[in-house]
Length: 265
Image 1 (cartoon, rainbow, N blue to C red):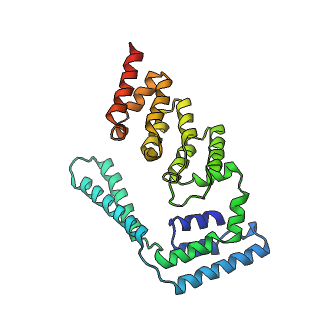
Image 2 (spheres, one colour):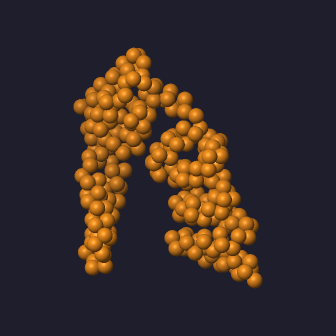
Image 3 (cartoon, rainbow, N blue to C red):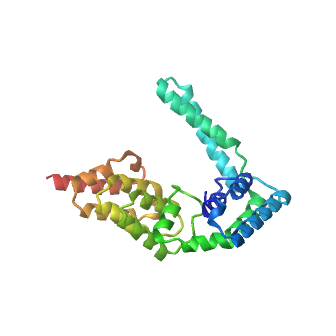
């Protein structure tokens, strides 16, 4: 795993300080100069010193993580306690339940320790230099390696649109959807993404976009764009997607259904 990914994983709380140190100590040294390796060794020592003297505390983010895990464990337990599962289904749910138990047991960094390490890592010169050297396609692929992280790279709307244009050029629909997921509630305009999914008549990714980031979308405007296609099957797929039913208002559903009837006449 390269340096940027290691730091990115820690900053977004996928790993704790122990894993961070282990990954940094075992990083591929061939890709760095002698001076860079000295800087990385210095970083490792600074991380160890922080871990040694700065306490780890359960903060608000960790509380929410544990609450979410407990809700999922309760949901899985209810399913397992029912008699409605066949052997294959039960094995699948049991696996998910055990995975959640393991996730609950993980020790995460929080409070002063996380804050100190966050500050140290995000200001590490080699990390910032490497991030700045990424071309648009590499940066797009880097950001969208995860469906969602709480702290994606800080970029402007202009930079965001440039990355979306790269995704459109390469027809990376999964990456476009993941970009929206990563930047939801961060004051980004997703019009280019919705326009592309509509252009491609991709009801699957358009539905996923609406489901994942509907608070960031102008749904009335989006629906008007969909209706302008006059593509009955496309409109039907959208209005009949079960998980979108609670998201669309009655008037929005009525508008789409009326458009379907008009085209069918």
